[in-house]
Length: 265
Length: 198
Image 1 (cartoon, each protein chain N blue to C red):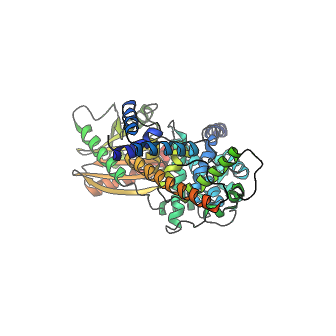
Image 2 (tube, helix red, strand yellow):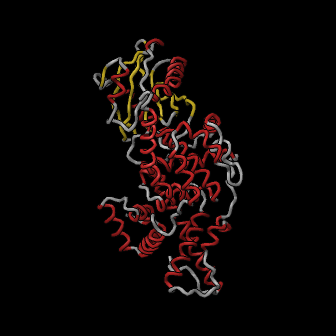
Image 3 (tube, each protein chain N blue to C red):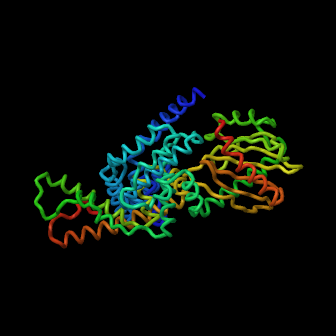
């Protein structure tokens, strides 16, 4: 191990993120390198001063706590109307959505620049396409094979963290084939399988970390068309070799059907 | 129909039990991201509103990172709304913090070690608040919110490698700033320099 590696890994060591082997290597390096030993000691001291539960943690002020408690004590149907009682304390920076109607909240959310996910986004997109390709291998497409949405939806219970909306679009000539458990970014994810003519569409649905709404983003990866969007606290990826306009049609139909479908869960 | 209010109450109770214990953590991140108390209050409130709205679709085990990620999006939305300009509120001028800052010239009655520790806390808090993003966020999520690297990566939407390099940069900057603060207070001759040499 050299000083360059040690400089980065020393933090993982302090944070308890290193396995025993690497931890030993970093410590061994520090034992023979006074500069790195000094660094380790000072970062350790700093970590002890800043870490959780310490003096640096803030406590929510009482007025905020009671606001939040009032919020969660009210039935959801009354929350919207209660919001008008929460006056902006000083100015209305958040007024547009924190204190506005549900509608303006949605509008504000849609205006938000999607925070740059950068390479993470691309990595997930690649994985989604790989999962799609894997699913096309013989016998890999479905874990539960039925065109009945009421069978597919409960099948995911306990298998994934989300209640994926399963909608029947047979009338719009997208046939529901079934569902599958897949893995993206080493997390289990729900895959719902549709078909139009001979083209398979995999719709991946995942719990979204950080709720925000985003419109479908188009990508083409390895010749497959990909659409990614977020709504209702869920992340959606649709992958297929369908033509662009047909996949857009599919995405529109799903996006429109989803809110109704999740309400009936 | 008749069961709906009961189901609704049950849902609220589940949300309360899951989300309320993390209020201080959410508020801590909000304070460091928004850098002023009123905005932090509003951000926390918006965070809980959104969380409540999306709670039906939430079945994951890790409530804290989920809430923190929502909060982060709320704050980012807000910054985007202000056309990318962060509020230039100086954390040190903020009253609540100023109150906690000891008056260094006053002789302290309490044992010296405790005094030093309080000052250290105030100093490092100010130094963390002065870190530029995304380093401030990384250090707060790690130290104050006690998230693992993987959780930070998910909340911030970046790979774990990026989290590691951000933390390394953040701590290096903190260490420099700390040493500078120490030198400055030592030079001022008040004898109230931070108690730990880094």
